[in-house]
Length: 126
Image (tube, rainbow, N blue to C red; front, side):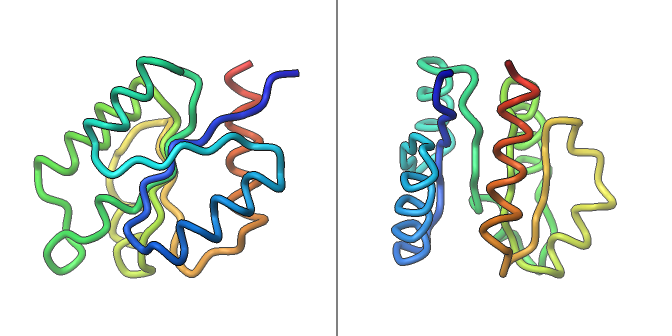
């Protein structure tokens, strides 16, 4: 069985370090990315990778700009995307149609919950 791969884009260095260690312990390959362009390049190398990112959770007052919305929807067409964000942003995002392959989970989140999303997504892609 092949290992799942996560493309992690997390701007909090301490949290990113915890997530890398956690995923590695769970036998999940992790590649840290710092931009949408880097995520897209990594997906061209491994289209089955699962994106875990907080990149879009910093919009003004919890609102997605049109550009941010378009980025998430476009990325969700080619990959499973798990957007991690604050509770108020997550609540607003639930009202949007981001696509079937985009999941928004609120911070703070349970690592087991995140792991379950990744495992289910990986199984659906096989």
